[in-house]
Amino acid sequence: MLIVANWKAYVEDLARAKKLLAVSKRLARQSQATIVLAPPAPLLGALALNNRSNVAFAAQDISVTTGGAQTGEITAGAFEAVGAAYALIGHSERRARGDTAVSVAEKISHALAQGLRPILCVGEPERDAEGRYLSFIREELTSALSAVAPRERAEIIVAYEPLWAIGKSADAAASANDLGEMTLYIRKVLAELLPGRPSPEASARRGKSSRESLVLYGGSVEPDNIRDLAASSGLDGFLIGHASVDPRLFAASVKQLA
Image 1 (tube, one colour):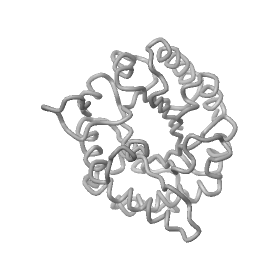
Image 2 (image 1 turned 120 degrees about the vertical axis):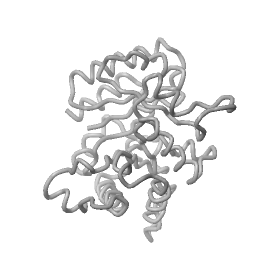
Image 3 (image 1 turned 180 degrees about the vertical axis):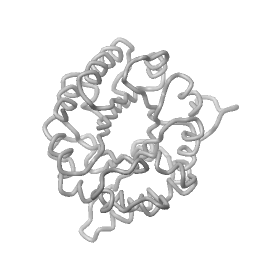
């Protein structure tokens, strides 16, 4: 189970960041979950450089550029140099600030070129009875992977984050049944984009393929609902936002998956 903690801009001082890292190290030792922390960029460098624990690190975003005269930009190469192993790309909060389908695809290519594993965030703004949200998800996946070589597409982790569920209470999260259907749908679309990959049905019959992309869920994930969501949805993990910066809530969430 992959647990990605997106600290967003909630954590602004190093002392608090170190306390959260200590909690995460303990959880990584005590559980079978793989824990990835996504701190703000300056704190990532302070925490990840020379990190020797089982906790990994992710950039919250990367630049669309590869370097040069670009004041204020932080490239994939810079994040990799200080110890990041993953990169969140296309998060709804970044899309709201200007990320487009084109820039998301470019960022994925830059991340892969520098050895960062992309965590592609997708999610519809609302659910409609006609099922148009499925086409929305398909388009986000297809456009993001269009510039990536087929052999590299399996490296991309998909985080499903419906906008209508982000930043709310556990009651607002996707239901386990709806989430299970969406997870299967995402795997179906990915199967079409990965030549030679078994169908989701075939994978379910004989276990996960080593070439199968991971699918995570994010959106009001808390200790009260994480176990039910994990048990019946076929997910590979979670992208946790506000609950990840509360040591008590984050520890309780991870322990629910033991």
